[in-house]
Every structure is written in structure tokens, then in C-alpha cells.
Image (cartoon, rainbow, N blue to C red; front, side, top):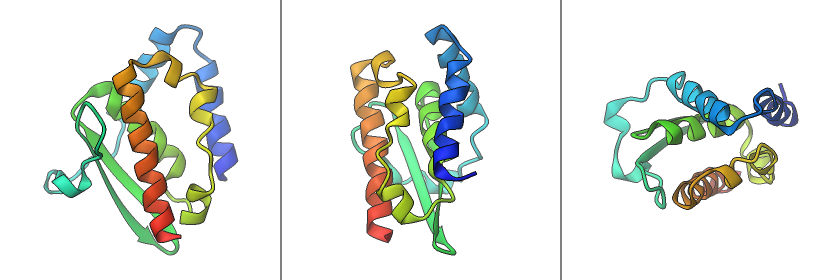
Length: 136
């Protein structure tokens, strides 16, 4: 699945739910299904700055593609980072760096999060973009 298809799949998944309560439940499920994160990787240098809750992001460059793993100590935030890495993990740095992340707005995520969570979302996106730009 290419990047555009992956983003459209997220939009389609979110459109299945009419109520934001159901969409939050879906985010929680995404977080529960996040790949296990090595406890030894929960270090200061992997912590995303600007998030109210703690979010760790680890990455590796393999065969010209970035692969991300992440964890959070907050269940909704864990779902949000899971959503992002689900779309962007396994993509080239150029694909990620050149993307506008507009699907996040298309699903209405920013409008339905608290201001502190919106700030955290922005920090997650900026961190993923920075890693991509540094490796492009």
C-alpha cells in the first residue's frame, strides 16, 4: 500500500464512526495493538518534547526506509502515535518529509482533541518530519 492509499485507509476507517466517542475507542484500540516497545529505549533522547504525556519514538533506517516504534504512558496518546507510525513507518525519508500530514485534519482529529493534546500531536508530527528530513 502506497502512502496515499494508507492515508485514505485511515480516513475511511474513521468515517465508519459517526460519534467521536467511537473514534476515541478506535484510537485506544490502535494504541493497544502497538508493537511492544523495548523498555530500555524509554530514554530522554527518544522522548518527544512538547507532549503533555510521555511519548517515546525510536526509529531505524533500513534499505532506504524509515521504520518507527513508539510508546506512550497515556492511552489516547498511544493511539495517536500508533496512527501516525502506522501510516509513515516503512516509507522513504523523502516521502515522509514531502508529505503534508493533511489526513490528520481530514479525520477531524485536531478539532476533537484538547488543546494540550493538539500540541502533542503537532510535536509528534514535527518529530517524524525532522527525522525524515535529517535522513533524506
